[in-house]
Image (tube, rainbow, N blue to C red; front, side, top):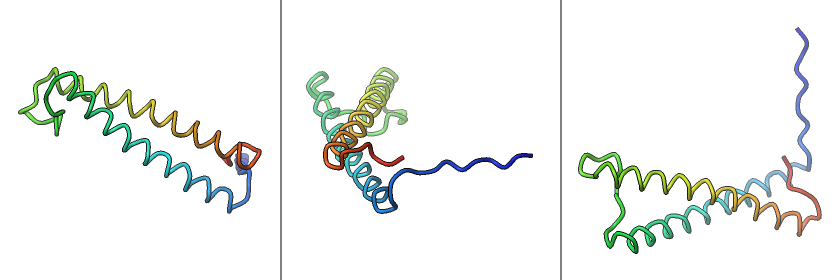
Length: 100
């Protein structure tokens, strides 16, 4: 059996470490913004607090499904926007795409 080729990572170790920190930081900021935005949006629409635990038997099916679907959509979009924003900033600062 032939040996698998290893993927070469672009960029120096320092660049990769810096990118990991920037990407993680942008994801954390996005998570905080998303959480606050989702909570404020839920309160504006329903005049109630969002479900603390959608899996709880005390939470109705409609609220649980709506909160879960909305959260999943918001988190997915937030992750893409955070990564693309961080990559755009990296490219502007470094003049090249972030390391893989």
